[in-house]
Length: 206
Ligand SMILES: O=C(O)[C@@H](CO)OP(=O)(O)O
Image (tube, rainbow, N blue to C red; front, side, top):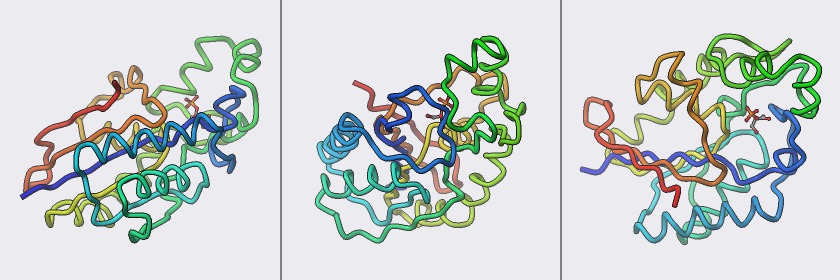
């Protein structure tokens, strides 16, 4: 039985391009972002993947990425659940600021800690731990059951909401997760065992 979970970070957004902290701000994909999402769909199509259900966040950049992928695999009308549990980490007061300006103001090290550490939240925002505290229960209750009954499930979401999910799936520590970067539009394919542990993981980053 195939129990397949496909995670895809949205394609490049307008604020990725402008190098701004985005978080819950609802910005669109760039031309490149649309192309990356379509290319992700083509890679999944080439694998012969057909989905049973799709999940995405409440934010347009993830929703459009999800739709591009479904269109590419010929499943444009597939049932898709949108939930803010899968939203990007809330960047709080950093939202809308330029990342280089923030480095000048607070220093390289502090900004890196806010962006990639496990449990240090940016001012008035969520740490990765906080993000995981909403992503992981949502995964367990709403998403994983579809995979365990033999489904193939698409999740189109965000860099940090997916980092939180991957941290739990891979059993990574707070120190290890600092190094994990997810590319825009790069599919990550998990096969799960019947007991919900990970049987295999493949990153389609070529
Ligand atoms: O700005 C954001 O919301 C995220 C993702 O684009 O940025 P970072 O990679 O710095 O966590």
